Length: 46
Ligand SMILES: [Zn+2]
Image (cartoon, rainbow, N blue to C red):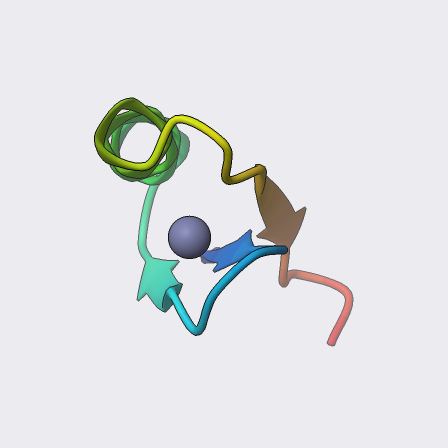
């Protein structure tokens, strides 16, 4: 299973193998760019 971490405000786009990594990557990006919104997409259905 993998998760795609995607930012609504820039080109940040990353695919990670587990939820913990995905959510920490999202948190890191949002911490770095305060106004960006990062969403995590479950890719298992693709
Ligand atoms: Zn961003």
